[in-house]
Length: 396
View 1 (cartoon, rainbow, N blue to C red):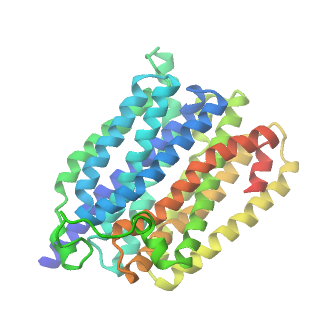
View 2: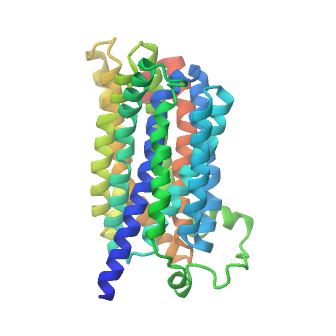
């Protein structure tokens, strides 16, 4: 009975974590195809990079808070910040209000992702951790699949009905879903006592850790060394490539005059690839020896695939901007989907070996992810302006 109750608690936590990741991914997925209708070409790069930068800056405080207080109370605060970002985005289409919305939304999404993954890891034994993480990432990242076409269709519908601020009306859906997630969070039991017993939380939460400044911000990296840096480099490259291609490709399609619905549908195949590969990445990462191997293989396969796409580009219709985008996004998201769960598992193993907590382990992986997402959009726009989309794929 006790085992059944524990398994039920894990499933409940995994379900809530999946919903939180889904909402965060949905919001981002919906915003990208809307951004070209809200700002100039250069401003779109600023908005998306600001979102990545705020995600990056929020990660360390979020990880520290998770390790000190456990995941659930951190999620509650993250929901408030994330919701505030959506309210900003919905309130006005002016650039500065949208910038405030992206800053709050990026920080809130970062907190939610970090704490949601920790919510699962707090309750799972190592042998069960990979499949549950794969489930959260596989189903949660369906938000990137649903978001773009839903945004395009809703925007078209809102424009036809002459809804005020039709460009941001689609964001009402993630706002409603985050309210549902807040209610669902109440069904998740606290685990602070067990974490204290395992020394993954301080015995007295009032007394802060006496770590140096560098350890507070880069605890896993400063303790583990080169191995964690290698994982981080892989993640930064993969997620930076994805955000660069997504931003540049969306702007290129907008420049060609393609309708919002088609722009929204273009990332769907990539979303399917990520949902499928994230699940199998989690299953494969259940064996510890596979985690490092997958982290080495994925970037290499991606590089060869993008090189092949560049070689094939002269044989495609020069006016066709959709096909190269769909293929490039599919390749990138397949690679990062396979690497996502193993990277978290591998970083968690390294963190535990050096007495660091779950929050710091997720923070270490997400710092790399957000670094890539912060640089990617502006880099993508810069290369697109000077050399075109094919050159972007070649550089990546």
